[in-house]
Length: 237
Image 1 (cartoon, rainbow, N blue to C red):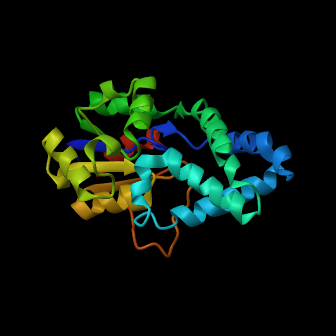
Image 2: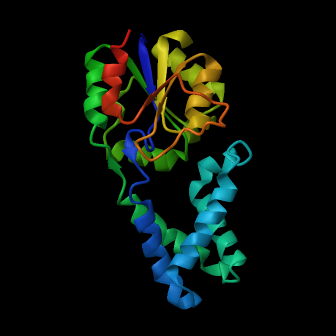
C-alpha cells in the first residue's frame, strides 16, 4: 500500500469535458450563418482536425502550455479544410472558451475522496499539465490547493507528464520512493505511462467515458470508474 497518492486534475478531479460539446455547439452556431453552413458541419470539421492534431501527444506536447493558441490553430485548420474563412477562428475560439470555462465543475466524489485520503494519512500531490494561468485559475476557483502537500503545474514547473522529472519532483516533495506512491489519472499516455516509467503504481480512471483498447502497449496497474472507488481499492490486499 502506498504512503503517497498523486492525482491528475482535469477529468480526474474536475469535470472539464462534460460541457465541451454544448460549448462547441454554441460557438459554432454563433458563426454558422456568417459562414453559410450548418453548425454541425463546422463542429464535425473541428472534431476531425482536433483528433488528427492531438493523436501523437509526444509530437505536439509543447502545445499543452499554449492550449488556447492550439485550439485556435485547430479551428483554423478546420475552416480551411472546409473552404471557409479561417479569419473567423479567433471569434469561434473565444466564444468556445467563454462557454466551456463556465461549465467546468468538481466531480461529485472528488472532495470526499481527497478528504478521506488526507484523513487516512496519505501524502497527496496534484500533478497537472497545461498553462500556468489556466491551471492556477482552476485550482483557485475550486480551492484545491489546501488538499495537497505539493502541486506541480506544467506551465510553472517547466515539464509536464509523462516526463519523469514531474514525478521525481513530486516524490521528492512528499518524501517517498516510487514504490511507495500511486498516481491516479485519466490519460493513458501522460498519467499511466508516465507513472509506470518511474516505477509508480498507476491507477487509470475512466469515468465511464473512456475505453481501454486491447492494442495499447500501456497497461494500468489498476482501473477504476470513479474516484469514490479509490478508498476501497486502497484497502485491497
